[in-house]
Image (tube, rainbow, N blue to C red):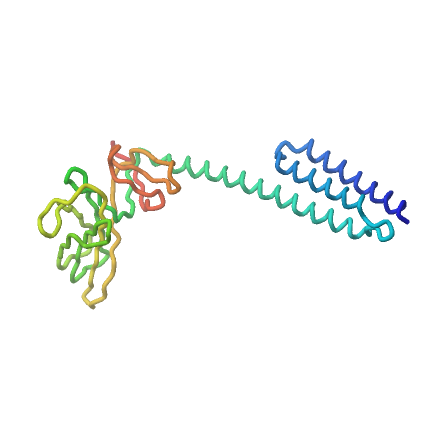
Length: 237
């Protein structure tokens, strides 16, 4: 009984080893890690067979179940590798598409205002309908409001936020990045936040960070996350 079981086991293992060897030699994408895992499995499998109780040998369905489990894991590993390759390929396509905007005039949502040598970058906002009251607020990195401008009633249209880089006391703020928010109240008393935007010609694209961003209008220009771009125009220059 034991000899017969061993013979059938050898045949099954031989077929599996030949199959795995053929797949390994014919697959140029096999990795050292997957080969190591395969060899480890076969060594454990053979050791299990050698150390089994001869009076109660492993049944054929148990062998098939173990081989099926390993085959499933191997296929999942190959699928993971394929998905990683697809992801890398898609990332390369996305990078190429983002780079194509260099030299183009873009509009992007932007709440950050950069102050350099006392001069603040300019933002804009658009009102789709007339508003009874519009307020522009500037906050520092701690979230404290350092400047507030009540612009009163404004008709529908585009408006510029040309902050002079000074706080509410007229003191020039330190260089750095500040946050701008625009609050509007319509004739019915409904309050809403209006998205501020920035415009400029894309000078360069930075892919070093986890969130790619554009630099507008020169090496020291506004940094805009690529995902924030809402409009692209061909530069007239």
